[in-house]
Image (cartoon, rainbow, N blue to C red; front, side, top):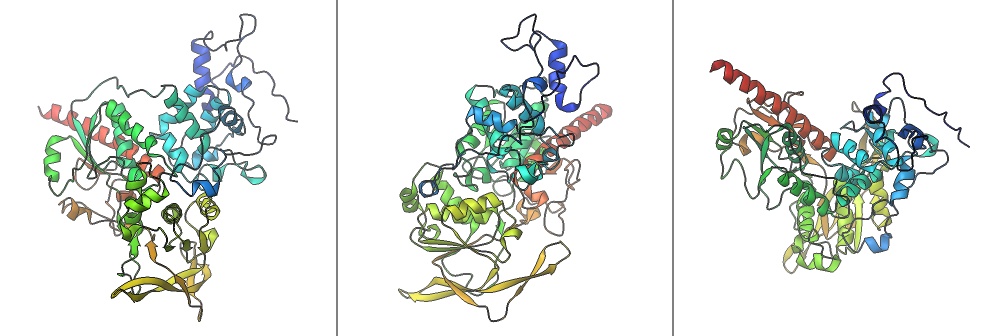
Length: 535
């Protein structure tokens, strides 16, 4: 049995940061701090007293129950329902309220996780939502797609022996509850600045920058080359991980707050970059990375060997409209359709998991993931690997492709399989990862009608794409930026997300976008001061 916490008397000094919200509320208006059943003779207890925290010993970790694998594999709907209110409250109460919260430390956004878990456990959901929103532009999206097992939950101090606190599911529950209760209102800045800001790209970095710029008082103009805003949130991430209604309502919210979105507008081609510079006080580049890494083996140009992003975008364009398994397959390009085929996906990251699980839903005859390292060394989320296994995906670890096999079918070369060899992992290299080497005489063959390459992404030629020869890039091709302000080598031009960081997680793109917005604000204000001095 857990010891009973002693009653906390009226504090005589400012409490720690994690209770500062409660302190301000109680000190400024004690009457409002009383719960509904409090009386004048019975002072209201603070949330530190009411919420029974640190219940990780008495309560086991739980997540919303997944839909049955045999059922969910037939559609593109999300596999996790949203937490029931009592379940979310009880899971939040497992938080240990650490003095040094490693969940917060290892979150790229440094979300105030223990704070809003405490408020959730106490039933103060509106406050919990606003606290989570204060550091994260899109908490319900991160709650759904962040690899929490590698970030916040994976670094929870109660992970050893008691399993971590369920953070992501509670985060998604809070924000969905906020939408249901109309707590999410358009952004109203206390002051509007006259200059506008141009943002090229409407992925997570661009949208997060727009959100913060709106709060800072600017009107952002977002330029998107596709027919819908959202970038890879819309077309790259499958519906079974992120329902697109969650993305669309955030985009609509930004528009209601004053953002202007220009779709089917490609900057650098039809519209010159210099024309945007004349229209806006600053420009943010946030187009992400789309150039897939190539696999340099014989047969790579055969029909049936495709890039992961081409495959996912084609699949998501159809599945986003709510079509079921058979309907999706009928509407797809035959070269990007897994229905009835033996599918092999090469790679072990989150993109590879999106591909194998999408192929299952398209009705593939078999789906195999070929990865040259072992399961422990997979860069993606282990949760996604487990989900894929449950849905029937076969993992062929410690194996690398050698060549693609073809045969003449109706007078044309067609992909029929691939040859691969077994891999041995040697001593760790300079990066700390074990070096793979081929095992002699270990060649084997896999049947394949469709091979999807999910080997990661490289930077595009950004100076050429935007016709900006003075745009400095790193040796890896990413846009070179000031690490604090996010400004590029061109004054007034900033960059954020994958095009500056390299291919990474959505949560990092959100952080970069928010940081870039602050850098833009400081630049515009300093420029305004300089202009006044000259005048």
